[in-house]
Image (cartoon, rainbow, N blue to C red; front, side, top):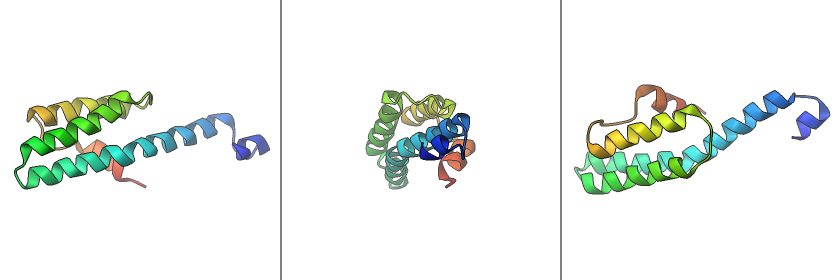
Length: 99
């Protein structure tokens, strides 16, 4: 905000940066739960995996973040809980792993 006040970046850039920071902040616990779910699946503990995926999904659903990736991730997590999908799509995995 200080950079915007100084005129170093404009308001649009500031909002873009803040949006990405909010997304990253949301992704920390979400991806942690997904990772735990994946780990549970790797040892054939589907029940625990579903609980972790549901928790990740719950965090996404409770969030008011406007990023379109959020809705796609909610949908894919539903498919993972139902057993129709084995992991997040490549585009979501790549987006969430880029620093």
